[in-house]
Image (cartoon, rainbow, N blue to C red; front, top):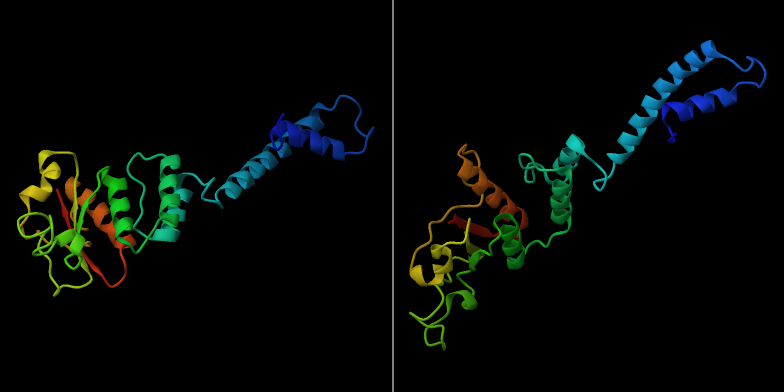
Length: 218
């Protein structure tokens, strides 16, 4: 007998009745009390369930999706077939994740793809190198930089480990990146575009406000 089940509530109801009023054998009374206990037990189970749904750590089913929508709108959704525990972890990570930094973008993209993205800031010398700099000059390392596009960055995200990802720096030294804003193709219905949309939304959620991040998915 557990707290709140039919037998527990039945015994509680019977103890409320005055002793000696109905004798030792009370089949009709027991039937009536059992009917009441069944209804009250269902109400108690509903109360227990509702109480669990008030906290992300214990919420389940659609209530967990509602909690995610309350905090993140449409930016964080449960993947098809994703369990409550996995989705709960995603919500918790999103609540307390770092934001507004280069590392925040790198972390969120790696969480989605499993691979660290390439991030290029045209005004960051560590990304672009410079003429006459040791091991970082023209034809040695880095990419083209520019002072004319402030507060912008380019992100190359990788779907899987492949030769293009491994040799990206060598193959694209002088390539002009295919520019794609973080909110592009959100309405596309192709499977690959849906995955891209998740990346764009995740980056948009952690990037610094007032900046532009261009994304290419390899």
